Image 1 (tube, rainbow, N blue to C red):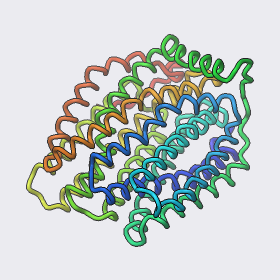
Image 2: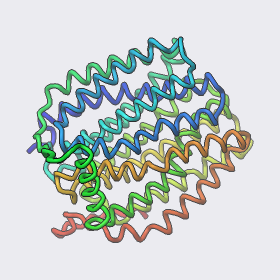
Image 3: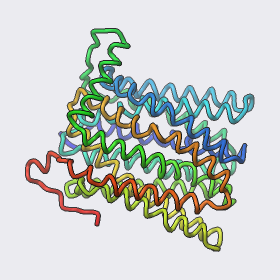
Image 4: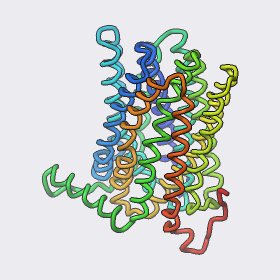
Length: 422
């Protein structure tokens, strides 16, 4: 099977359109809330609430991906998201921005939690094993490219015309993506449930948890490590970048959009590097990527502590943000491909979604925590960043032995990767 086969290409095109729409919404809605309230605590609380459905519903998304036609899930959810944006536009001038934006962000998060496992679980059905790393890298590149173009375009449009045209553009993207996905053909390996829905959910969750705990304990340990990493570093980036750029540095929505775009560009570069080096990356040394991501916080905190011009601080922060996203993407693509490789096809969706749910469970708490911290220490953001660096670096160093237990199919056939992250 060719890498760029017809169905994979259709998935790619649908993802480009859908993820662009998702990107401009994820940029504009929190920014609108931050502008409307001026409170990092309210902003952090709203972001935390929006991530709760992602953690809770990811296992549900995995169950659906393994039991329902994956194409139908993607089509239905894209049409549903288009409808959601229409409802938002009808209520934006009627209801409180805090309540309305928070509700819409929560629903969008829940939709993404169910949507993404279907995309990820379809990869082993559309690609041979040797193409999985490259295929996942392509999907991540699309995510990063959409994240690059979305905030830049959204920042310009939002800064000039406001929120309404941004949401309208997102609506069009979701509708077009749904139409595109109708023509995808994904092999259906649906499992027919013999019991009630609750018994099926319990059985499926039990099988995926049992697989992670007993048959692949390395996955369990890595997921716990990522959960701690999300609690501290990921949550800092999600809450800290907009608060520092908009409130502490006092810069425009367009410049915040450029910063978000540069972060996505870092993710794009990371996806490209992972795809190019797919056969040479040494997954046992992947923990060093997380350590490097922690160290990148050092110049970010230093430039905020030093008496430097605002634009100089903005440029350094933006560069560091891009670096963190590049490193995180390289790590994520490797781990996702590893899980897809070692997991049986009938469990892929459930295992990936369960791993995502556990790894993200701490993120809402982290976002709420940083919202309060930036409210209390708004004039000293470098203190928050410095403390995060120390904590995350310490966690990664203590957990580095986990990766020694990872064995890939390539290594079992004697094709040992050659690249280390020293």
